[in-house]
Length: 137
Image (cartoon, rainbow, N blue to C red; front, side, top):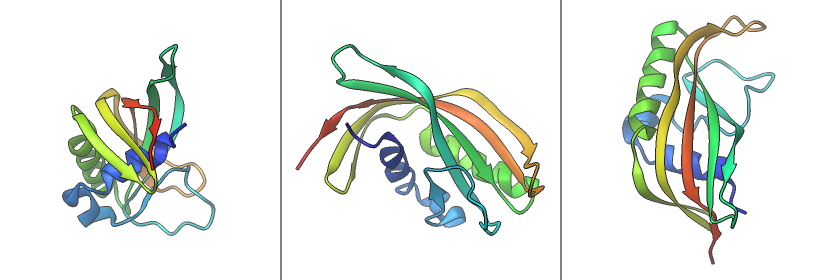
């Protein structure tokens, strides 16, 4: 099975306006202890579905868009939305794995939040992403 998080990260890294702000700081894990605050995105899979044959996966991703200020966190969220919402039939290859993101839609609009432990601002949102489950090479 493909690594769904790596595939979504691979797609996001191709969107220049987003990487101009967050660089390579798109993580497939929650915020880790010791992380220094910069503009970044962290995401995790929060459920989803697969077709009975396993050819299509539809994970739900929860994204946290971080920034040194609420304004920067909202900017990162807007760029994430632009990079992901509404895409169709986007081929992505990461290492020896490949997928086609058939569709991606925001299913929970961004909430402005403050992290309890660090007091850092972030925007939390969820996307449903349908992709093919194939391993190549």
